[in-house]
Each structure stands twice: as structure tokens, then as C-alpha cells.
Amino acid sequence: MQLVTSPSKLQKICLQWRCDGSTVGLVPTMGYFHEGHKNLMRIAREKADKLVVTLFVNPTQFGENEDLSTYPADHEGDAQIARDLGADILFIPDAGSMYAKDHATWVDVPQLAKDLCATSRPTHFRGVSTVVTKLLILTLPEYAVFGEKDWQQLAIIRRLVRDLHLPTNIIGGELIREKDGLAMSSRNAYLTPEERAQAVHINAGIRAGAAVFEQGEHDVEKLKAVIRAHWQRHLPLGKEDYLEFIDPDSLEPVTTITDKARCAVAVYVGKGRLLDNWPFYL
Ligand code: AMP
Image (cartoon, rainbow, N blue to C red):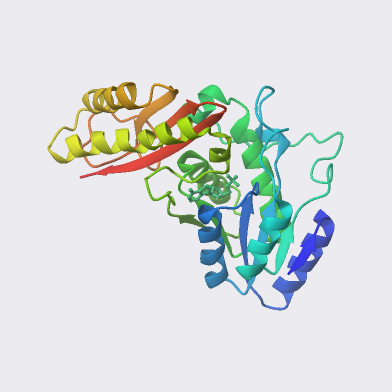
């Protein structure tokens, strides 16, 4: 595995691969790898001849009072994992190399980058869309793999790739959970033992709603009430950011589930803001 730190060098290698007829699989990350990241790497490894993993804590997707400076990092451990999973390149860009001082170009998908995470993080998806576009242009992958944990992000990336005619197939990797159901996240490292014990109820609350749904309740307000009641009882350290039922593709809100809806949530627990989502499919 080659460690690459210069965007132009990454581009040169990937262009050469493409000219030679090799396909590239890309897995963009912010590092501090867990099983969720590893699963994406395995999917890309299987699909493409070359696997490129990128590790970049992208400053433009963080708001002013967010955790950019404290985001967990373990570059050595991550490099070992990427190597073990067969990555050909681990790209960790040099500080400042991804954005020129007078950087002025943005990619935005406002129709999908509203509501849900965008309510509390209004500039987040503009940063994500811009950096993902840069990484796709740098590597021109046949496949790029993103996690379903970030459901809104995945929908935005699918849309921007389609709208900009980027030559990449976007693959969604299933949401990987801890044994007790908590969605894996690098930010789980922020949790104290007490917060960690309660955080399991983010998912348990959603599943309490899913159980009522299975019994025939399709009214979203009623399902939300079941989930909130569970959280109030078992997750007193949590503070809801949002709890929404959305169309899985358009992300538009659903009031009665007649076909397919995704329950998407974000909950603040201690220093972490944790995401989860769950299918409510008839
Ligand atoms: P991050 O490093 O958190 O920015 O995530 C990098 C990629 O891993 C994104 O596509 C995420 O959606 C994905 N990811 C993070 N956590 C999980 C998880 N628990 N299950 C599946 N994918 C995940």
C-alpha cells in the first residue's frame, strides 16, 4: 500500500491506472476506522481492481462550534487496517493541499441538503458535496462506496453524481452496528460509560416504533410518540436533534406510511451527535 499525501500525485496514479484499463474503487472517510468503514473497503475491494481509501477530516463540512479540532484520529492504526484490507493507496492529504487559499468553488444540492442534518448543520452538505466531488475527480473511480448510516449524505451524493455526469457508480454499504444495536461511529469514542449505556436506546427506541408499525400503526405522529416515550424513559442524557420519517429517495417528509419510509434520527448524547436510521417498509 502506498501512502499518498499530494492530490496531484493521487490524480496522476489513478489516471495511469485508468489508461491501463484498471478499475478503481474509492472509499472516502474521515478516519478512526471501525467495522462500518472496513465493510465499505471490503465492498470496494471486491468490485474494483484498485482500492483507494481517503482519510481527510474536511474542514468545510464542520460548523464553527463543531468538533473539527477534536475529531478522533489514529493514522497508524488506520493505515494498518487499510493495508490489511488490501488498499492500494491510502490518501491522507497534506494540510492545506485540498483547498487553495482563495478556493471559491462549491458543489451544492440544496433540494436534498435541507431539513434533517442540515437544520442544525446548515453548511455541512455543501462541504461534503464539494470534497466528495473533488475526490471523485481526483480518482475517477468506477465505484465509490458510502455508508447507509449517513442516509441523507448518500442520497445527496447519488444526486450530484447523476446531475454532474460523473463516471462513477455509487454503492451504499449497509449500516453496521455494535452488538447491542448502536450504530457504529467514530464519534462514539466521545461517550462516557454512562452515556454509552444509554446510547443503545437511540436504536432501541426506533425499534419500539417499528414493533408498533408491524402491528399496523402507519400514522407517523403516533410512531414518533412511541419512540419519544422510549427515549424519555431510557435516554435521559440524550437530546433529540431530529426524528423524522422520510421518503427514502426524495427525503421528503412522510405523514402516513403507505409504502416505504425511512425513520432518520440524530440525538445529542454528551459531546457526540449520533445518527441512526431504520426502514419502515410495508
Ligand atoms: P466518516 O469517516 O464517519 O466520515 O465515514 C466515512 C464513510 O463511512 C461514510 O460513507 C459513512 O457513511 C460510512 N460509515 C460510517 N459509519 C458507518 C456505519 N456504522 N455503517 C456503515 N457505514 C458507515
